[in-house]
Amino acid sequence: MSESREHAIVIGGSMAGLLAARVLSDHFDRVTLVERDRFPDTVASRPGLGQARHLHVFWSRGLEIAEQLFPGLEEELRVAGVPEVRIPADLLWMTPAGWRRRFDSTRLMTFSRDLLDWTVRSRLAKLGDLQVLDGHEAVDLVAENGTVTGLTIRERGTTEPGETLTADLIIDATGRSSKTPEWLEKLGYPAARRTLIDPLLGYASRTYAIPAGFDPGWKALYLQARAPGTRTGALFPQEGGRWIVSLFGVGRDFPPTDEEGFLEFAKSLRSPVLYEAIREAEPLTPILSYRRTSNVRHHYERMSRWPKRLMAMGDSLCAFNPLYGQGMSVAAKSALTLDDCLRGDGDLDGLARRFHRRVVKNAAGPWLVATGEDLRYATTEGASAGLQTRILNRYVDRVQALANIDQRVCDRLISVLSLHAQPQSLFMPDVLWRAATMRARQPIGPDELSP
Ligand SMILES: Cc1cc2nc3c(=O)[nH]c(=O)nc-3n(C[C@H](O)[C@H](O)[C@H](O)COP(=O)(O)OP(=O)(O)OC[C@H]3O[C@@H](n4cnc5c(N)ncnc54)[C@H](O)[C@@H]3O)c2cc1C
Image (tube, rainbow, N blue to C red; front, side, top):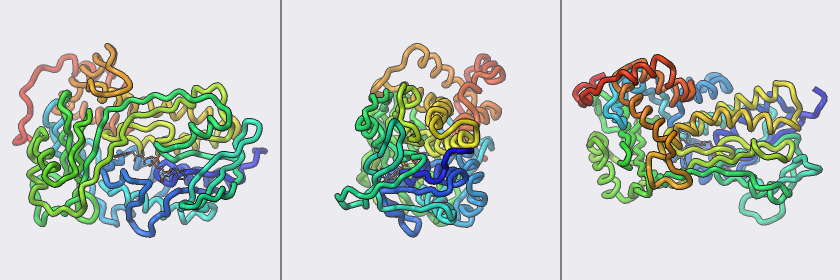
């Protein structure tokens, strides 16, 4: 390798940025992570990660990759008291097609997002070649002759112009508030095409203490809306003997953040089980809302001109409606793609094109899952369901119903949701045949749901 791989910069110290920094440390002499927030010294929230106060599911493919990059991570989380939930064996799951039988298809470690980030950050801090510049915000890119050569940063809270760091590669992992579109424009590049599909989804979440002796035969609840119904609710255990409860409403049916409204919303879900669990439970936090949940794709891979040595990763490239829990796992898969691209033939000048194309391919399945569901709602902005989507959704309805009673189909569906398989695997002959020949069946009642 003749080109210099002396210094790489990652902007943004959330999941995409942390995993990118870990991968880059194998390929560059030095890596600098620039994060606008000051990282807390303990497991605590921070302003740039507001979504951490809401339910975060790290599907198994994502966690596997994180474990590969930080061996022993899962054990550390377990030692920190993270519970494990078998899906759906430990989960009462009201799907759009009714209750799902409690097969044992996969396992989730159900940690708080703050614990996950803190654990990953602590592991990263042990890498000798990594410098963390937290409390610093990226302000501008520096480019010469079509190549990005540096980044201007300044201490948060100051208005001084700040210092410029030179680098051989810069990765933007600043999420939905990425300045890359603005920076490209400043550097004289045409605006990249953007696709935005907005289900107008709102979250409201709160944590509760799990009541002493609580043992109803389930550990978690997931009560999904059935379109055109708009309301979903979830309850999952977390470390510290807590439940995280998130309520979700599509099409501006936002769950309220006052006590009474929150409980009323919970009561209005398709089963009263979540309401009944929380109505007497002790709340540990206020009720917080979150509404920045649209699906957004920046089509950087299609740009005819792109500044060399600049890349976008994670939500800054492609963000999903978070209801399906895919963002962190897509970021993890992108970290592996980054590693692969850096190991392969080809120089840093062509890296962004190779990387963006492959990431977009990897994100196509999760994009289809999220937007396909969102397009069931006439209120979704940015696109409407064409014939193809409507036919696809009809088929998905059948697969959902079948997965409620057939373990093999349940396993396949969950392997798609957990990013082990592409949605196309739901069209393999075995599932296709079962879905085509499925007979209408009485819905399963909750009394049939013993584990
Ligand atoms: C409500 C909600 C629930 C979600 N639930 C799930 C889930 O269950 N499962 C899942 O996999 N995903 C979920 N996601 C998505 C997940 O949070 C993201 O996909 C994941 O964090 C990866 O995002 P990211 O690292 O690209 O960006 P982000 O997480 O948005 O982080 C961007 C980082 O960049 C920093 N930053 C921003 N601007 C600058 C700047 N100029 N200079 C320096 N630093 C800057 C920010 O402070 C922040 O730390 C959810 C998202 C939301 C909103």
